[in-house]
Length: 292
Image: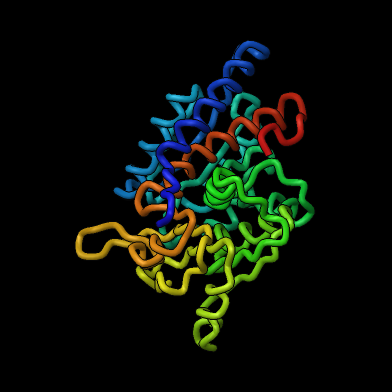
């Protein structure tokens, strides 16, 4: 029977570390990291997520400001706002909350954010640094996954790591982080499934990470004995939140597994605040990799 990787418990431990670092920053600089979250419109899901960010920021001591702008704002106006925040020395981190209206090109705007203020680690320059293993600020969900794996004590060197899902915000950056730890990485996607090869890859995974947004796409019986299973999926089925892995059966085979909800999610928000601290150091003292 697998041991649950409790994201809420891990988040508490990580927040304590960040609080200590914030105290040191305040002692050395007389201020704390200041971040701006730009929200376009009032999407209910975005508002709820922003509240959770605000709560964690307050607990840790990060100066978090939510800047809500009209859903009718133009691409040019948003660009100018981001450029203005880039130039503001009192702003250490910037994020553009998703979703955005159809007339807004999110990826173009994300690449206008100063590399050292990119809280979500999705600027092309920061992704490029991941390839070189020179990353200070990394995407928050992959960072959360890596913290969960780290908490198991597993040495990734030479281990078979299978990532199911190849999105630009989870699967692809996560594969780079795993490679940096000398795991042997396989990334699976829709074509893997269409070719009938998904089950074969899953069965040999020492570490299985699934992030496709499809409930129960991974049969729990495919999971290798004593594997580490990280389920990033969040799906609503019959009023319940479930992951991408068939949990009950996987629980019988894995050594460690994340629950959904309560696994990757709580730590993801903490990783955003860790990025804020990294950004502060990059701007103030050019210090490399405070936590990583």
